[in-house]
Image 1 (cartoon, one colour):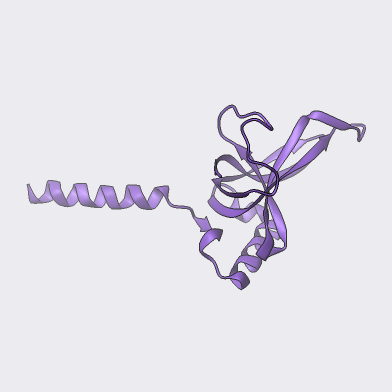
Image 2: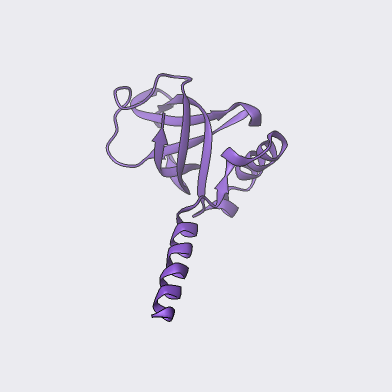
Length: 135
């Protein structure tokens, strides 16, 4: 009985820890936040597969096609982090459509997902992918 209870408690502890963000930008001081976001943008391969949590203002970037023309099918979602003086792109989990399923531009949001890379028009980009967004 005692071993079963101990096993259950350890399993619950590790299950909770696994669900936590590897990089939680929401809990960092202004200086640490700036340094962490700079490092993510400068060394993106180091963060691949890590769970990232961030808060900031909702923004979009209109994508372009291979000829450099605006492509209405390509909308890239961003979390602008004022204290870091930059933004990180994120992809959403599930079927969400802009603008009906998203907050107003510049609304405060919290985003959490796994850092990943993807290709678009032959270029490699990075984002917090399959994200859950709170607003």
